[in-house]
Image 1 (spheres, rainbow, N blue to C red):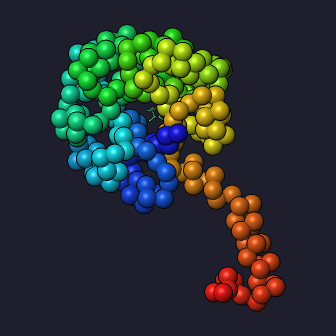
Image 2 (image 1 turned 90 degrees about the horizontal axis):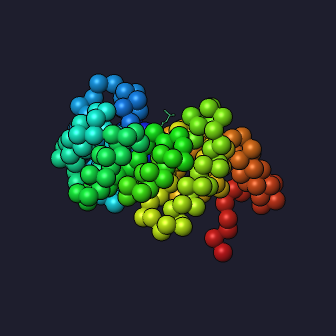
Image 3 (image 1 turned 90 degrees about the vertical axis):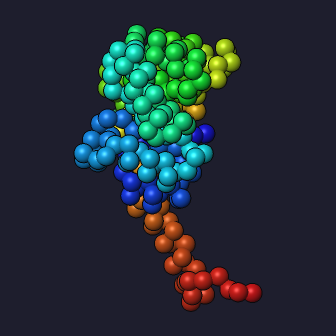
Amino acid sequence: MDILFDTANLDDIERLTPIYPVTGVTTNPSILKKEGRVDVYKHLRRIREIIGPDRTLHVQVLQKTAQGMIDDAHRLLDKIDEKVYPKIPTTEAGILAMRTLKAEGVHVTATAIYSKTQGFLAIASGVDYLAPYYNRMQSLDIDTKGTLTALSGFIRRFDAPCKIMAASFKNIVQVSHALEAGADAVTLSPKLLRQALSVPDITNAVDTFISDWESVYGTRSLPDD
Ligand SMILES: O=P(O)(O)OC[C@H]1O[C@](O)(CO)[C@@H](O)[C@@H]1O
């Protein structure tokens, strides 16, 4: 299972990567916008420095034409590093860009996925990750779980070297539903993970165990022997 941080916030990435079992970081232009007008390549190289070479870093292209997307992908590989996964929107131009980049041996993440059709086209184009937009699909009344299950079935049946990285989460329930439906990976803001672990019931349970112990032994520690 892959869990990725969907953020470009350096403080969060630096503080939380050693704690959570994350395997990478995803960004898009809207996520980068939250950091202000940063020196973008410097910022993304800093993310790479923090997460190290073994976690994946997914960065979106900006252009809408196939050649523009390919050029953007080359720019990202050149300015950040060769291991970056350019994120290519799954449009007609995007499909051509994905196929071209895969033929060059570049890692590719297909993004902006709302449908099975986009998904199977990206799988057939040889991409490494598919990023279906869980919350955005749900808001459109699209059968989100059914779409993920179908895509996961296609990948297994055709033995495609592709992982589903579900994205666009607005609550933690959507994340486990995506994993149940067949997502191999989920990318979410660290805030969602932290919120899920800070519910009062969890803290209360831990506090009650400690105070029960203390009421018997008069101390909050385990004996040395
Ligand atoms: O609906 P949202 O929150 O804008 O999310 C869009 C999603 O698309 C991605 O760009 C796909 O990787 C994520 O970074 C993000 O989770």
